[in-house]
Length: 483
Image (cartoon, rainbow, N blue to C red; front, side):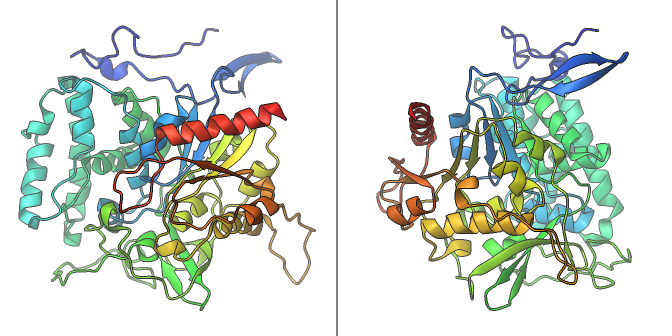
């Protein structure tokens, strides 16, 4: 039996072809391939390790914090993304249609679209799927622009081959039909992401987020290997508990609350028991369509520090969802684990506060290093944090999620892993705004690595870029090889 890899011709990537290049499906070098093996007359699949010629990475991150440094991880990278984004157009999609949040995944998919000439079809597709309807406009203006796009009249379609245009437009039409079925909910197109609409429609059509990710990657010739931390067709909500007992629900409420403008809503809710309707005790979905990531660093501090983060259902009850099996499997097949820079409590911790993750990280025999890229500045979630606070938060979350809950005081004995089982190296930038206690960090079993970052503005702290991350990883692996 022969196995084939469907991939673009290296001499003709499909970006320049007006024909059926949509079927030139991409390979994913960072994703372990399957190898056939015959057993007792039947074939099975055995997961092989990534190519050894290139260092492979598992990168745990949010949707935007890691985008600037993706090039540092090359092609052999597996990106783990949370499913809890409820800001921007994701919030409106969830409010009206329900389903999983796809904003962070769409952001990474667009970021990993291969570079292309400015006038090429691939660049035109990138521009379309990265396009966002205006935030500072009336609802009618936003709807009119959306109508031009969905009906194929917008200039955004210029340069896109007809086969790809009609495939993308077909899913946008499907999205429009689902919105019309729920017209009483008054969907807002203000600040709407076309990529979000396409990915949401594909997920709803296939009833599978991984399938929607595959479709997005296929039509963009992307090499992205992106795994949602949880595979579900339902909305995932996170909540944070503060030291003072207060509870915040939803990523936006925890990280960057959006002030709601006064609004008259004449809709009548008529779907009892729906997770997106405030009936029967379910949690009402707020409109966060005006959230823009550029304003995250202007925040009102929390009333107390966050003590833990957990998942809840539509009725506000704590739940314990299972992590994506492919996520757990990836933790035993790659060379380096990276906790990316970004929001600690709403981007990194949702990927760790799941049962089975701690064991997979601590007991992995493939990881040569487990690296934390320390933010150069704190945000609302981590106001006042030091580097040690970041490290202890990750270790405590993993150990807490690993422990079996007791019933009547009876339970199996649990292992509490040391910090170094989860983090072996801390990478921080010269001039960082976050205090780094090198002796204190080293005492936890974590080695500190200082690198030069990129300074875009002399009045602001430096940032990680591809060069600084590549340099840090290279030095870490070299130091390990010398031991």
